[in-house]
Image (tube, rainbow, N blue to C red):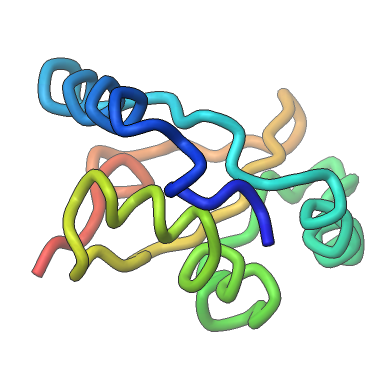
Length: 117
């Protein structure tokens, strides 16, 4: 399995939590090994995002079990739960591959906010 959160030191998680509280975001340490990224890349490569008019794919939690599992069950989920609590879960999974030719307007409610229950 990838870098477990247990492998990340407690000060590292505390630093990320401090950044999250102060800035509203944090940058995670590397969470996946290359061997874990390869199957995810294969799925993404199959989405034909090199189209000049396609800037991304939404609703991947529903449409890609491989990608959904990666964020719901693996090290990414563990890292999120270490910051937000045991009940934290993915609410959206969107892949962006934007270019000048494949771009769309992001309104205030699109992809900039998440659902919180």
